[in-house]
Figure 1 (tube, rainbow, N blue to C red):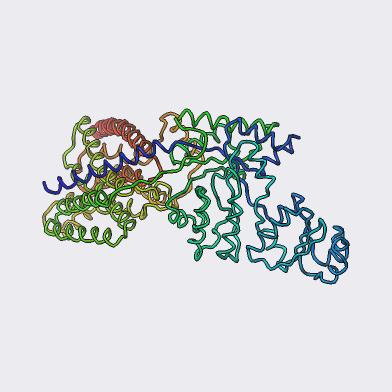
Figure 2: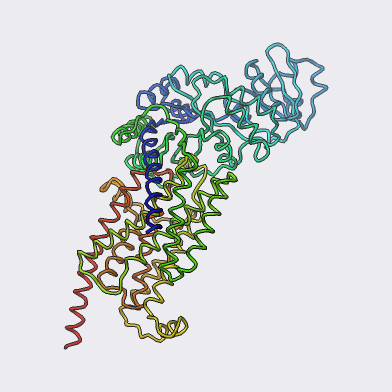
Length: 639
């Protein structure tokens, strides 16, 4: 009774935390639709329009921010800001007239194998020279009148990808269109604190800056200069932008250093769209799901070109309008991206929540027949939990206890509710609901343990996903193996009796099918799961459209129906292990739904509810089919 009381106290604590998280999610409703400046320029040129006019069209359609990629030396050449020549080209051709403009002394100093940037605009020269110097590019400069030259011994390949900052006319054009800017900074190799300071002080001059994104797989200064980088970004007083699925090295650490001042961005790349040729509806659905089910707050719509669609501008304007309408229909506000506020919780609340996991673990040891060990395991768990919190290892403690929660409670739920005798269909439904509620105790405790903006923004993640799916399978299989074999003769005799049992064809077929399902199940858990077929993607989209929130396939098509069938048949002996293990899959999936902390709580609840009622229907259908099959088999045997 004491252990039950502790669990109830922990549930109250976790429920309080979950309510705070829910309220925070309700305040986090602003979504920004963004476009890429360079793509808008190209689209305007194709249409014979001014870029400023096209920017205003996108603004009127629903765009609020523009992503500006840092200009490289190669971009500057293509944009006509400068001319890049080798020294040999200057000496032989002098097509830029720079030798004559700067004077005879310059000709004598030209090195044939060096590169020279020839610029005719003082503002461009100051920007490019300042950026290259800050990035430790060895250079020398000359200037005379309106002609400027920058010399460097850097190779052409390395020089062309060097960032040269953000052109003032571009930023001004975006600002004049009434739009905010998100700048995307490029990485460089020779990073110094002074270089970071210069680069980000220049970014600080951008008006209506909405965020800072990074272009490359590694952030500048990783790993040694993350803290100086954080100081410079902090002075801008804007969030950094986490690009979903990009896994940029250093970004999570930077986000945590900046007190989780992060907004998340989702996009569908031009390469992906060209390969799959998404319809307008499919594009809108993807962006909608990102915002509603994963708390994405910046949606970057590229300019997509479609075969058979002659007016690309009209298509992309319609796409933005459709995205805006779909988001507003979900109750989201299309304006500026809202920033997630801190979720402040006392360590006492966290401590109380963790006690429920320890109590659940002790209950499980009693159920497994190891009651004598329960006090010692409970004491060890309490000491470890207290020590980790006391020495400020809060995040490792959270993740360790959350992992224990998702292992213990699904196992305990099945151990307490699966019986040897069968039940009526109505009682089977009640048993499935009760089992799921027992499992959801673990889910609520996990929600309480991982309620933090770092997890909600995916700067930190629940770890051990595959183990959390596999360990309950092993535990439940072990518990029921000895139950199904009886108690005579000890565990060795029970194993021998199991191995000598005859197997009916129907059980062999069922075991084979479920074994394949288990293999697929394990391969598709974790952060790196197996690929999903296009047919399944279409099926998922259909479920989303019909139900609003798609339930998990392994719950409503596998785990819940087969567990309901097991309740109907009863776990008579170990031949029913395949049904039992399938039931474990459903319960583990039910709990692990809540490990996706970046998904809004209400979405996870609807996902679980839809999976449960659909699983009940599927299970009742299986019971009917089983009874029909038994009737046919008995009739066949009588004949």
